[in-house]
Image 1 (tube, rainbow, N blue to C red):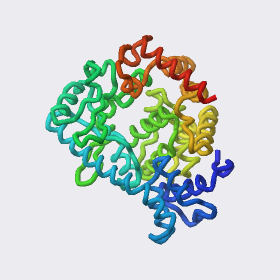
Image 2: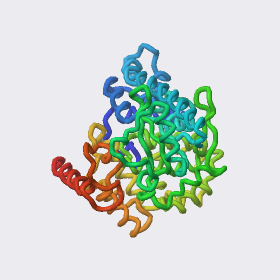
Image 3: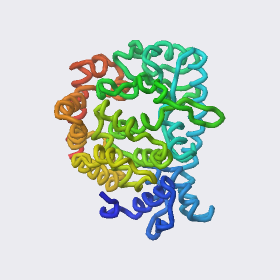
Image 4: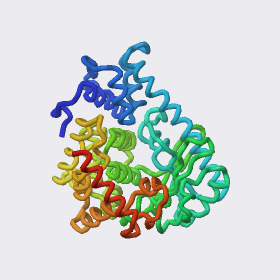
Length: 398
């Protein structure tokens, strides 16, 4: 699927072309994006909608003088996002210090670590919170350490312990009263992706150190980060261009050293071959071929799946043609696509059942007086309320 074949708005076409020049360095054959007929404010709002404020501003600065109308409009949305990035980077350092003092191992997930790994620049990627990974056996200690350091436990009102048996993360509000911090005990929900082995993150081949500000921070290696980004984008129905853009940037910067055979072996073990194939196709189709392509055997295993190609086309068309809507926030069509993302029929049936009846952490957190079961533990009042909400939302959209 090529964006050129879709009836895109002038602003969307310009956004894709500009961001592509920043994600993958332009060569002599790459044309300079045309801004004819593009509204500067609409372009800036579109960039913010897709969490691409920093990339858009940097690309526009390469084209225009600092006083240009496009640059000024982009700055109005990008500078607050960059300020937030710097605040969250400082918070990441603070949290790591707290956990280090408590002798709790921790890795940075996504956030500023991904900004450096994908773009080499903290200002070029927007993110909303600070995510860290700690071992499951350190769950209780991590919550205790952060609570004692002044972090507000966002689930304390539920009266439920931070047990890895029922949760895969735990949310806090930082002492500044505005920064969200999430401590994860698993790379993703074990119920949703039971084959994902979070223990691989703690192996020597699973993590590395990334320079973030003045500190070297432990983070995931690209071979493990790539499939995790594919899962993350799928979980959010590829609702923002930031997802495939970060993946494209990661491939561009790490491609020469990336162990593709290790990636393919991991996605087979984790049973996310189709999910990973869709992710790679979206990154390639929207932001161009990386400088170093995967070996033929890997490309054949991950990219030549007709089901993955069809799903990538569907996600891309909705992502590009409905930029002002929230089509990705629940519908029968999205439910069916997530079922089709499975590598096998039994896995797809299990996924469909869980998506219908397992409350998400966000839905659980939103409950004023949660009297249902712990999310994912089985049928109950919370799960039934969730189904009612889904039905009501569907009929309201019709």
